[in-house]
Length: 405
Image 1 (cartoon, rainbow, N blue to C red):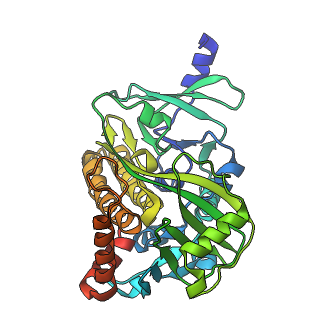
Image 2 (image 1 turned 30 degrees about the vertical axis):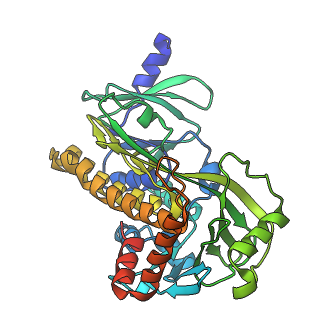
């Protein structure tokens, strides 16, 4: 870096530099800006890409409460819809759970994540918030000191740096924040041994519930997104490309696994998107490393079986915003000192239920476990489903954890 570039970079600063314009980064930046904290959000992609990348769309009651509390929920109340039913289809028939009326009560709001991100981004820019698109964070430096900085590459390819008092890593599992963690950071990783083909179909929902189909050929899932778009999942051979099958074969397989012959045909349409998802999970401990703090997918990654990721991200963003505001505006660091422990309690709860749900929906495929994929494990799954079908206690537990974070 030349002297002139270095001088330019040193003039770019904020009290908090937020990496990543996903739900965690945007909610955090909005709350900091509203509290009068000087912050800037750095995002390597374009605004168009940020607003159109499709992700999960099930918002838990606590997430909606957080968005309500900060005036960020107009879009989801206007264009989203409430949902509280899931349907299980197995060789023994089908049954439904009205989970929104079970447990502590409360279902999901279905609102595509790209719509939520668009709402949040519009709100942040409307407040006058600073954001730099096409700015790639390369590394976080000197996080163990009081003036960390982020080295970046801008849209013109030139290097620069942003100095800060704190850096919030909300830039995902492959972002600069994780790459910059010290050797003392511990990463817990687990591979469930399952892969999904994720499909976004230009077709209306085929049932008025989240559909979970268990079949000898593998899992299939149905999740409504909008009146005209539906998300489907197929358990997939690991390593196979997303385009290994044509549309006709995929729809035929969905019909078979979801037992359309018994329960009604699926509405078909062209696929707008295909993606491969290996059901893996990980957790970073701790979530604070000096002046660097993690939130969202940078803090933990969950398998998508229970739609917890975005909900954890919003929860962590609110907690981190309050802690940073206390530290910067009042000199009170108690919130930052307890941030990691507080978030990890929620993360491990979400990981536990996600793992339970993954085991329920799929045959045991762990190659390191004796008897994986055997009739024994198939029997356990049938027993779990029978209990979920008949036991009110089990149903209440399921509902509380299904929507809880």
